[in-house]
Length: 81
Image (cartoon, rainbow, N blue to C red):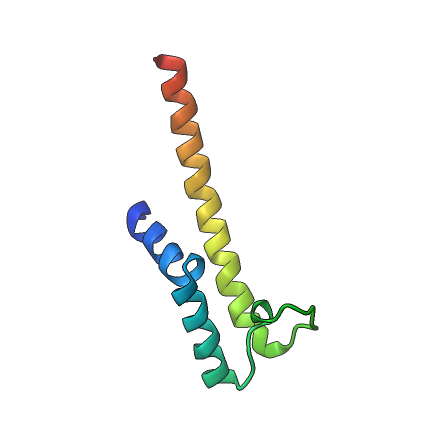
């Protein structure tokens, strides 16, 4: 796994405003409704939301692994320096 490419993908697709807006527009075009995270009001999830939720879950899981690896290396470097 290339951590830099993955970090860039998360940043581009989920962190920066343009990526979030693009994901919202894409889902409205594909599923005729906005994703639940696009609305400020709570709403009930539908079947149409499952793929988006699963994709976000995969990104969160991968990010957690990268963060753990980074923190472990940082702690190791602090101990050895």
